[in-house]
Image (cartoon, rainbow, N blue to C red; front, side, top):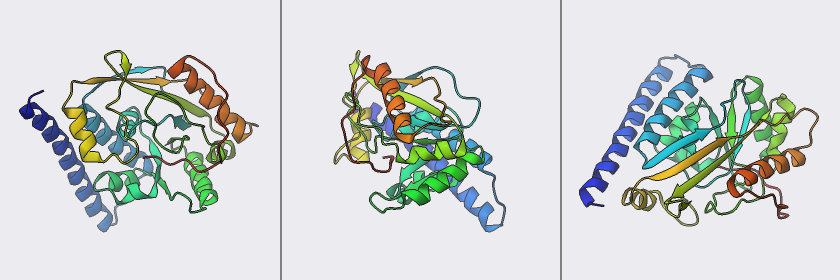
Length: 263
């Protein structure tokens, strides 16, 4: 691909970032004037931004399944930072994210204003986050988390950790399992995963230097949480995603429980 075309794609993303900066400035002004915004409005504006960012990314997206009509706790496998705008464009959502995201320019600010909850790995604040998640869901605001706790290369699925799924049980909402798959030339996309020591700029350059890839988003059958144990919920959600992505059901590997954190 020509260098000029790569730069044009990057310029498009920068225009979207500029839009986000403008939104941040406007919202910041409103806050200084004491004009508060309801969570529903914050999530709608976040969805608007996510949709523009997704359109600027080099992916063709197909969505299978039905969007839930009631607020739920969404749980998805996690491959890349691009999961967030691609899922965030579907419906007004808040995210459970790692604390570092709060410091990201534009994206961190918008994430906070959209009602994202932040958790610091290993800080022992999972009970506090569980209460915040429960309160968020009880107020009828949908929330998405990545129960694997980290990103993968898209060729396998890590254990879904169930500790924070207690929030869905406490707030009496259902789980919405989601399977996201990146494909290139009929094979698992090796460019899309954002793992290890990868950095954002290198990842963007890698994506834009190649032709468009395909993304499949599967909205699976919701799982009722009433009277359920969190470990059983995590297992059922993982099996549902596993079946869609890989066509097989396997016993998950035993792993220490830890809070789920988005990239």
